[in-house]
Length: 337
Image (cartoon, rainbow, N blue to C red; front, side, top):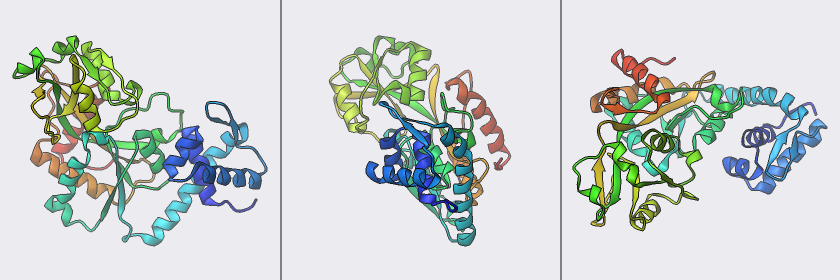
């Protein structure tokens, strides 16, 4: 096999990153059968087996491990070649994740700002499943940037796609407690996070996929009530209505009509802050990233999106240093790194 089919290489990288054929097929918007055929053709052409199939998923063979980095380089070169031809005409693809908290609110405000409208760079917004999915899409060159909550990927292998990410904090949003209106705490004008210990924090899915909520629960000693499949905000609030000792955390500026049976109470002393970040590929940044960063900076400055006081507010430890750094960059009209 002298020539690589980049569609097959893309399929290989998706499986190598997900270590699961079904999840990889979802990332690529392929049928599992179609993905398997691409991998089979690639293995046949190379004359080696790239994956060992196991009951729980797949793992790279020694040959697959050796092929991984050259495959990433080959795909990156192909993407760069296409981008060079389309320079100046290709929109920046921005994938957002964390849809329960409506990340498009922040993106819409930023893209609608007057300064951004004068830029010659078009932005095309699409959905991302989660941070690992967006990281994999950035590694494959399918998108130019992502927007959502960034956190270090626990257990990611060295050299994996998460390690190729650059990121910048662009918004810190206060978080409110939502609880049943008939609960005694619902009558308070505001609550401290440690007052929620008598309640159960209802999670939309498993704690392992919810970095912020899991860290909040650990920090303030709030028991968690985990969920299964994330079926959206309406389903989460219905679970709250049927859980007398339940509480849900939501960003304070999220459009929400709780109805008469639920109450929204601000949290303070300290105020938890949810961190939103822009992420991009560290080594192959899209040409539109600097303009997008400037747009977030200018919009954030006018709306005071980066206010953070350590004695007044709470952030997970990983976000604290980034908050200070982003405030410093914001004060000097952000520059890309």
